[in-house]
Image (cartoon, rainbow, N blue to C red):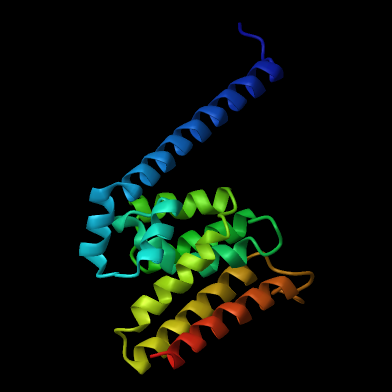
Length: 195
């Protein structure tokens, strides 16, 4: 009969965790390589119609290929999840739930990017890329569509902020989360004024 050894079980778990972290890092590195290649940039340009060179460079730096661009749409949710310097399990689950609601499936590049951003805080470059992305997509949207996207994004951010709850039902949205939600919606509304 084999004797249970807590140390060997913990060591196996650590090895397994290390293996998956390494695998995830390889996948993300592959996405970065793909996104920064000439073919990747050409596909991004062709499939999205984005013409902002700075945005294309930022997307390449972030490792966002054409099929992962949908993840950028949910970047504000990632910012809310990290508002308290730690994206907790309930917030991560809510972000991924919102992703499923807009059609992002688990076997897609967008899903991989979201899970990466939820496990490791994304660089500040992501905010700049998101703002440029909003500017680009708003250029071809009606005022009604812009307004609906702002409302949807705000609602999704609130769902993420409330996922962790509060103390006895009070303070479900922290001051930091509320500030980020306000900043994001303000930035989006300002984009509606630009032509």
